[in-house]
Each structure stands twice: as C-alpha cells, then as structure tokens.
Length: 212
Image 1 (cartoon, one colour):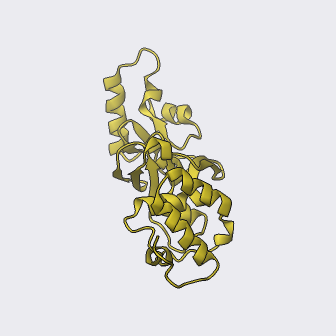
Image 2 (cartoon, one colour):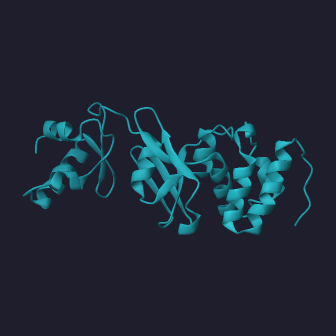
C-alpha cells in the first residue's frame, strides 16, 4: 500500500488500528513491515501495539488527548486530575492524561503525550459520559465522579488536609445530590467522610472536620 492510499483510507479519523489495513486477502507481515517503515520515517506515530496516528504534516485532524486515552485502553474513561482540570475544578495544568479502567494499571509514554491508567473494579465504572471535544468526542467522568475517583484511589484522600491541598475552585458546578449518590455507590466510609469535607470547603469552612 502506498502512503497516499493510507491517507485516503484513514480520512479524518485521528487514530486508526492496524486491523483496518488487513481487510481482504492481505499478508499481515507485509502490513506490519509497511507500518514499521512509516513509523521510522515519521509519517505515522505508533501509540501502542496495533494503534497508530498520522503524524504532521500529513494528519488532517490532531487527535485530542482524551480520545487517545479512550483508545489506549478499552473499558476506560478520562478521570482524576485530567477531568478535574478540564472542568476547571482545580487550577493546575495537567501534563499527563489520567484515566480509570477495569484493566491493569499502566503508564504509557507516546509521541503524543503521557497517559496513566488507574484500576477500578468493574462495579465502580460508572458516572461518565461522552463529551464533545469539537470535532472529536471521548468518555470523561462527570465532575462529581472524577473527584470521588481521585479521593478513592489516593491514600489519605479523605483527609481534610488533602482536600484543602486540591485548591478546588468553581465548586458551584458540583451537584451535591449526585456527589452523595455516587459516594454511596462506592460503599466506602472513606468516600462518605470525604463528602463531608468537600461540603465544608464549599461553604468556606477551613477548620478540620471531626474524624468519623
């Protein structure tokens, strides 16, 4: 296959799988060799085994980091610091795209950024939605779930000191009823305690709350 044929086949898709090139009577070894050559010539990026993106200046659409994260691990959604920064709930600029997944924890360094995946049990994979990112879309945690995911996975995340260090802002976007509902689904005293601290910070109280 010529590179121009690949570009026509991919069209505007920001990322593509090698399986797309294996339709029909195609020798897989030849496809893998061609992909390797295009990677070595910087025409395409390999994001992980079997997953690629067209490189500049050939790409028509620059893939959004959240879209790439969704493709890097199945059964995952963007959450934790990345989602909190997206909603402007925390002031930090996050240089690593963080997600939660039912898969194994891993950190992937790709030509298009660094991606981290934290493991959650399958019954905790809720509270996310498809977000429109302009010409792309990706599964991202709701503000409430992103915050609870972070607290749940962070040792000592329910402490008032840690919650205060998050320097939460724009907390008016948090739906208190959803926050409580989601915390209950975790079936964790840690999350119940954290919600008390979050509500205390939202009303401007800065004194340590009583330990449960």
